[in-house]
Image (tube, rainbow, N blue to C red; front, side, top):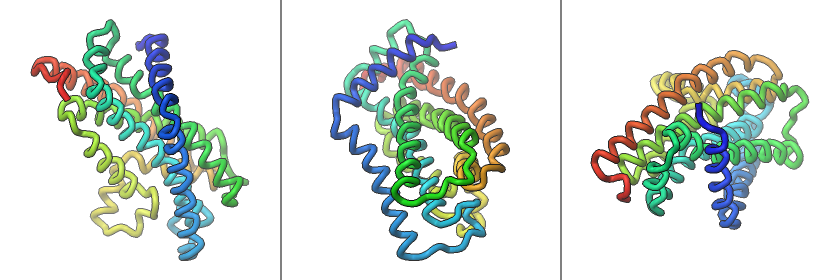
Length: 266
């Protein structure tokens, strides 16, 4: 089991670094809010397509707002972690971390800690903004269900981030691939439009992407107040399998970089 004081130390370090760049820190928050506004005005301009395929959402904007929120979590825990590993390589601290008396599990989860928590805070903030200023209706919401789906789904996406971090350790420039992967998963998983509008073979591919359980579970919890249990169970299974697999892959990537002498290269 990872030691909590190690995870706390890495979390505090990453928070201190992020806080020192206040403009970048704030722009991350503003970027998500601007995405919400874009889909709000798209919904008003084009009208709503009917609720048959909106997974319980009353309007297209409500559907897309959940997609934007979950995508923020996915990008922060996936692409954000890959970017963080890349920064560790460029500053030379990845090699330093690898020589410290900490386990690979502690390193992987410690590097993922701040992106995960920051993503949860941003997700909550965006939903509050959508409800307070953009008239998103939460009257039927199951808040325990929504919180459970966001937390477990975020952990599952953290596994993806650790896998992408392993790719960066090996390839050195894998953060671009991480961006493509997270974007493709959002598009195919139903973040911004119903998967029913996709061609048949693409729709089948989207059904295999685990992140769709986060989109569907969050919408069920937020707009219907029920029906999110199966999605939560699926996310829990993905997390239980994904985290150990991702940590093992990260360990193999570090071992490979050590053997090849490329751990300090960038």
